[in-house]
Structure formats: structure tokens, C-alpha cells
Length: 89
Image 1: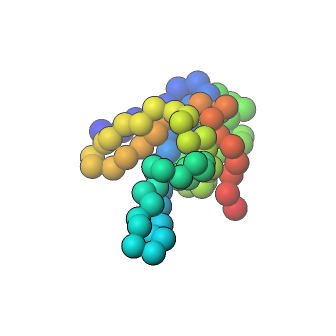
Image 2: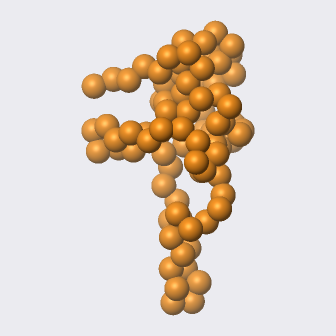
């Protein structure tokens, strides 16, 4: 199955970060207050958006932004342009 986002949305594959260990205490990634990262899989139909983002770009986005979906045992998130904080180079 293939998903094509529309308008000013991006389909992003999540990059999972490892849990941090402090002594014998494990701090899960969900407890950290920081933005998340992912790789752009598909770009929406908005022409301005296509000039900014390309498939394969690594982006930093708001922790609670977007809608998460699971497809073929992989986790993705559909983000609006306003949820994206930066392109990581």
C-alpha cells in the first residue's frame, strides 16, 4: 500500500532513538521533552512545499505534532508544514 499526502502535508518515517540509561535507571524516550526526527517518505501536493522538502530529507518536528500511523510494520507520521521545525543536514 502507498500513501500520498495531500496539500501541505508530509509523510515521515520515524527514526527511533534509543533509551538513555542513568546508572541503573532507564529513561524511556517518551519521558524526554525534545523534538523528534524522521525521514521524509512522501511530499504533499502543495507546490511551495515541494520546493522546500524532498524525499529522503531528515526533518526535526514537534513532539506532539502530526498523526501517527502504522503501515507494513513501520511507524509513520503525517505532518503539516507548521509541525516541521527544521531540516537536518
